[in-house]
Length: 225
Image (cartoon, rainbow, N blue to C red; front, side, top):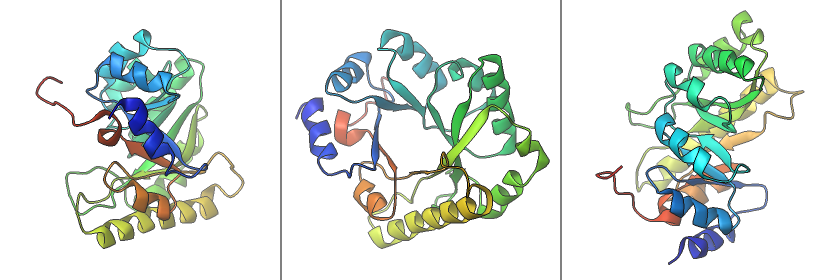
């Protein structure tokens, strides 16, 4: 199947209120360009250096999503152009994003990442940490970031009941934060969850952004990445 065919098949299953982020990490520029010419504008990368190499070679209207664990010392490389940073897991990172946004005269949109999975290797805050962050004076002084919603990764499992519960938990976190901190902020509206193997369940549970790579581009060759 071609990339275009894969994209069309997935988009036919996604409601209009859900946005597809094509996860292009480790994939060559030619594959991204093929997806772009098929109408895809949102692409996700998880390494700043790889994104920095690809971005100048591709059309300027692509919306780049940084979906990996973001190191503070790498923010400066993507701050001039990144569309949305999905995985913000603390105040230190938010402060650095704000600092680089000021330098670039931009407001950068971010999602707060929550740890909802069983795996301890996944990053993310718990709800108490997020509440403390959002209620702090330091957060309120950050003028060049826009918190647009939440993000989470479910347990990599064939137990879809467990995966569904984890997605549902993320949606409940979103609703709690919306009520407590963002009731008058229409820009706080994104729930980023779901990948190639579980995106349909994520959509059922309220996802507004799904991050799909393998089902579009095929399996990744990490040996050559």
